[in-house]
Image (cartoon, rainbow, N blue to C red):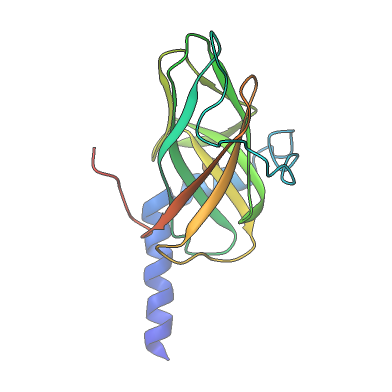
Length: 178
Ligand SMILES: [Cu+2]
C-alpha cells in the first residue's frame, strides 16, 4: 500500500523533472484552442506518409520521435524532428493523435511555454521539437500509454500533405543521445 503511494510520489517527481513543474503550471493556463488543435483529427489519410511534395516544393520527413511516458493522464509532451530536403519552406500548422483530443504546438522561451499556431520547417533544414524547446503538448489523454507502446501522430503542414508518424513511448525521463 505504502509502496504504491511511494511510486506515485516518485512519478510526480519525475514529471517535475521532465517538464518543470512551474512551466507546467504556466502552460495549463495558456491560450489554447486555435485551429492547430483538434481540427483534423478525423483526417487519417496521409498517403505514403513519409514524403510529400515534389519538384520545387518542400520535401518533408519526420524522424526521431518519442513521447516520454506521462505520469498523469492530463498531460504529455511529444518530440520529433521534421526534415525538409526540398528547396521551399513549409510550416507545421497542427498535430492530431489518437491519444489525446487536444494537441497544441508550444515553444519554450525563458523556460516558459507558449502556444503558437505554427512552427517553420525551413528549406534544406529542419524543425526540431526537443526537450527545453518547441514541442507538441498533449492534454486530456484518453489513456496513459505504456513504455514501448506506439503513439501515432498526423502532422499537418501549410503546403505539404499530412505526414503520419508512429513514435515510441519512452521512460518519463528519457533523453535521446545527442
Ligand atoms: Cu507545453
